[in-house]
Image (cartoon, rainbow, N blue to C red; front, side, top):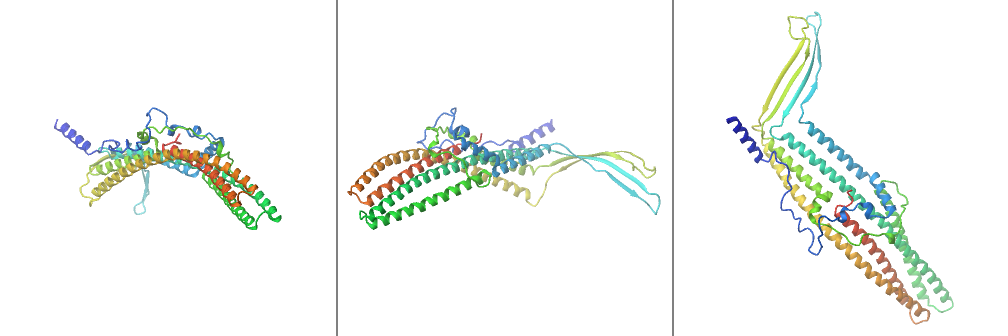
Length: 456
């Protein structure tokens, strides 16, 4: 009874030291207050934007093909997959550590004394060693390896989500540049025709040289701007090709006006970010891994029990009989209790505790960053939609203004500067509309990524 009571007391003591306790998510995380009060929180059971597959969100068939290609050929995601395979191998090794280790060590000797007959002897021993996990060292190592695997899997999902978002952003950047180049080309054609007419009028005295000079200067500026847009288009194509894991070439694509996204975005409740966002999951697994490392540092203070043995066959059991053969058997049990290790065990425990606190703070910060991204992206989507409506109304007014200015200029009731100003304002408004459309698409992608989208 005394022995049983002693064992129960030891188990209770070890449990109080957390050596055998599993990781639990810390309390007091700022989850409920992640979203601003102005954001409407919907039911947890409803499907959020982050739950939608990227095939359903990005309905452009050409973009879908490029995302599929990127997921197969991008080097970053391939590296992440290999890291996951490494973590799986390490977990397998940690699981097998509970089993005994076996080794075969055959030996042979040749002995001759004073030139006499050579004596041949051999041994065929099989050695076994088994570490008994009395104080949770192997258990915590296995748990730590498992959390490392979950961490790498979360990292792989984060790389996948980031890749999908970057491909979509690069694709839409090309569509924006296409739209800007189209508007620039149309404006160039109008200006070239205008300069030609003004030069003809100048020759017959109906236009001043100063007006013609200003028109030519404006045309050269537009041509320079158009050339810079072509450069940006080429660089955007090259950048997207590199992201896709292919050599630089022309990217097949549709148009900016053909892109459609849902009008309403359900973001769910903040608690879902804990399990949906890969970077948040990864940060929590880093914390869990640090927790088990601390447990390992604690278990190092307790004894280490190892059982070892050897069994085999030999032909050299004695000196009286020549080559007497037979079995050899041996067993050994060793118990090692650390007494004084120059402060290394205490230092390791302190370092492990500090690393656990650092991981906890990083986890909280990652969660705060996630909430900020959702808040910013959702407001950016709404703001870009309003901006597009404002610039659309502005374009309608400026189109009428250009028509009026052209009529007045033809009749001599308006100056060339007034016509130039009206056309320049219309071009700026049209470019702003294209930019607003792109910003809205980009904000939807950012919101999708912030909610953990693209992991399926």
